[in-house]
Length: 348
Ligand SMILES: [Zn+2]
Image (cartoon, rainbow, N blue to C red):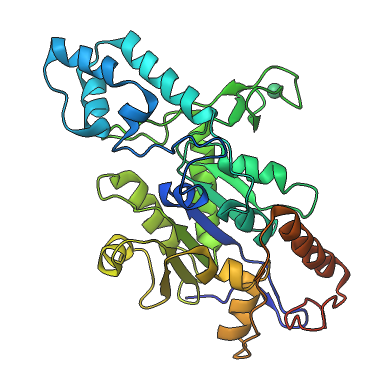
């Protein structure tokens, strides 16, 4: 039996989570012409050249023969062969170092909209190795209670304490036992990914399963759900499939691919026609109903009383977006209406 999401008509508030899934496209959108210092964000297509590991793979190929076309195939075959442990470690270290050097541009990015536009009940899951999500969390801190963040392929900015099962900023100490946090392993593009291989990843993927069971809105940003990643696809489909409110829930996909390709990717995930496709963040429910995404969707679809959009239009700096979010957050907690033109405050 489908069940309605948790919605309080007295306060216009929906407590079900908004779940965001980020792939490479989100980080490309955050720094289309390079990071703060002009460093290029590598893709799997140009990773060897950008990171400077071509000579290592070429040397291995001189002894074992061709490893394949592109980094993904080469790396996967290298793991299957099972030799060259030292070279593999060197490749891993160089990639880790390159990504750890990347910095979010000073200008307003999609990551700032996500951190400030979602609430504490919401969650962001990223496949990206780059440090942008955590950097955005830090520069947007002190304004609101931010959404929860998770790293599905490991991340260069995240360290863990295995003993305490705590995660934090790489390079810092565990808040409980003061031991230095250890770097998370990056999950490299092998054919047979094992998301249950490490304690850190098990936790992140379990969180994804849990959140998808209760999500009322899902935003998929720049993630292709490749058919080669059978395990990940199945976790998405199975977890959202048992969401008892899935028939009422909505999925939005922010992607610049052809619509047909996007629909092929997500056909088994979405419920009937309950999805929309956008080519940038300003089409997103998160942007149009800042900090009120699920609540506004519930008003429109459950209450048949759509509320006008309230978006940070015209805002062009991180500090101004922080101020916009700060006022909305104050309104959430006080129940007072702080803007005369905001038609979706909480409270009677
Ligand atoms: Zn600890």
